[in-house]
Image (cartoon, rainbow, N blue to C red; front, side, top):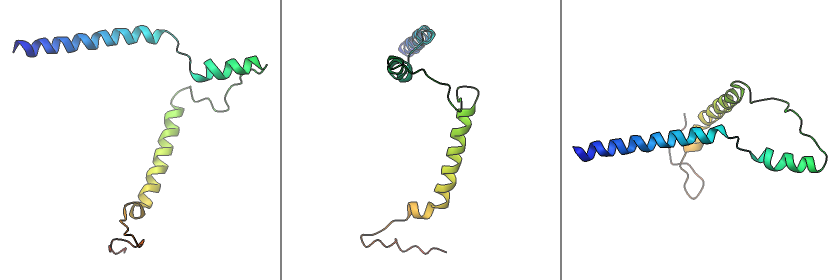
Length: 100
């Protein structure tokens, strides 16, 4: 029983330390490829960055775009479900299931 409690305490401390460390790291700004490479090279060649045509950093627009893409993909996969799951033999014929 004592080993079990010690393991739980050790795991809880591990997650607590990870949480505290991630909070300290999150406060620092991590540069992405756009900022670290693309913008740097663009400034060297005399070009300045412009604002994006559709700004997906605000609100849930990016989440909505992924929702629409997933919905469209789901409908396409559902429509072509038989073609996607039909087992074909070496002659290219189906597995004998009748399509009604």
